[in-house]
Image 1 (cartoon, rainbow, N blue to C red):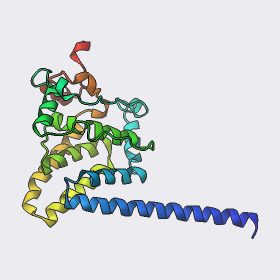
Image 2: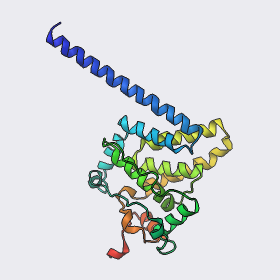
Image 3: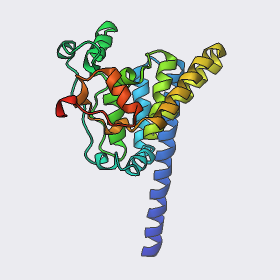
Length: 239
């Protein structure tokens, strides 16, 4: 066998292994998504789906989308990082402020404020998954979606609209599957929330460009008003 044939053979083997790896990743993602569809409250399975999609490189389209927007392009390589939530400190902020409302909901529902904070692998798309995991609970407050099935779907629709997140597509598919296999009467509120989230994602400026650390003391109504007027919320203390 000539050296050229050896090189070609090795390259073919490498390509085959790459294909097998991708197929394996897709299978793992599909299996974990099916488990999430059966039990949406199984957070470890949901995180596994996100990990599978990240390793498959499916967040790349989201990165490209963020780079295409002048408001978010500079932040792709140097994103805002949301500080860990200190609920006892946040609950001392003025009533109606983002920090106060966030802490109130988390304390009432006994939620771990930093549960979703993980050390994701340093691959392309990590910036989007980090952002989703750090801001998920903030988005619930700002967008006004509760933590029901429909509320979560509303967040996912907004997430896809603004971040082109494959995770959002996967989990929305799971929610629709649950309605199909369970009770179709649950579908209308899910569709309403999906529609509202999608429409808001197009009307509001990118939340990826908001420095949430700076606006925790701001009133939620003020933040929503700024977003509705196409403005990136900023701290009134800087004005």
